[in-house]
Image 1 (cartoon, rainbow, N blue to C red):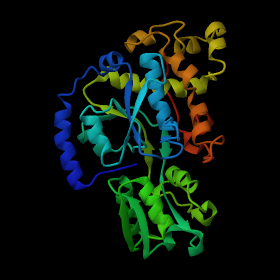
Image 2: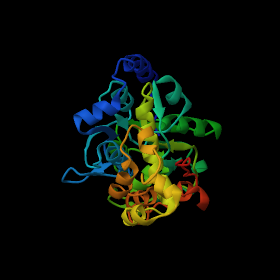
Image 3: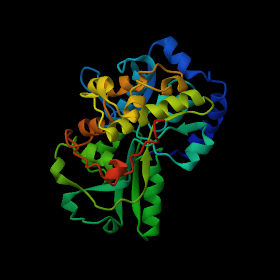
Length: 340
């Protein structure tokens, strides 16, 4: 979702050079340490947020948990580091975290110039606008002259400027560093409009004092493929993170859930299921992991559909329909390469 200012990019280009000196054996570091260091949002319901007891949950958090389950055999072995949009890439480049799983948009610039690799897309999203119902606005093309609350250091800022310019409209930008500040600015009347990824607007709407007093406009003005990120230069770790997520997607496609995984491991004759669960083949060995790495993910975290449903789907306050995040066979974009 997020992009950087010119100053921040300059800083990170220097940091990307420093990243080359970071120990490239992340798998060994995590296993020796006994826990995974994962960078997450400072607080976004459905994606990564902590409750009053400090327990983290969300669809991004589940990616962290999946990697911990694969590498350490225990999904709970994660230390979460809350990061703002401006902080996140430097934290990963410097080795402060092992993986960034923080509603982050995969772009060409980030993939090619920051010394980072995107390991997949765990949520296909797009930027939208939320407005106070009292304005009587029905479409984004009616927003000329509006004040817009937006998070700084994000792709949202660039998309906002491009959309208004292309439609010959003017606006006043009201920028904040954190998601909470954007929400508070909007709720206090500092701006007429709040813009962000559609999923984030759905999440933030549930936290407003009067959720029904706002409406999300129908226009989606950008593509925002959100996914986990790792440092370049460590292909073993890149593969582990990539295939940990793929295991969740493939499990849903094959009908493997956290509830039936033990039964299927013991009785399934389907070669694809047997390979995923480590009953046959050498997929774990190829990843430098134990043969039950994917079984541990599915048993402890669940498949992609289970994670989606409880965090952002129909079992959550957000109730976001699957849409593009449905399985490929159901008209969506979620698709895992074969486990063979």
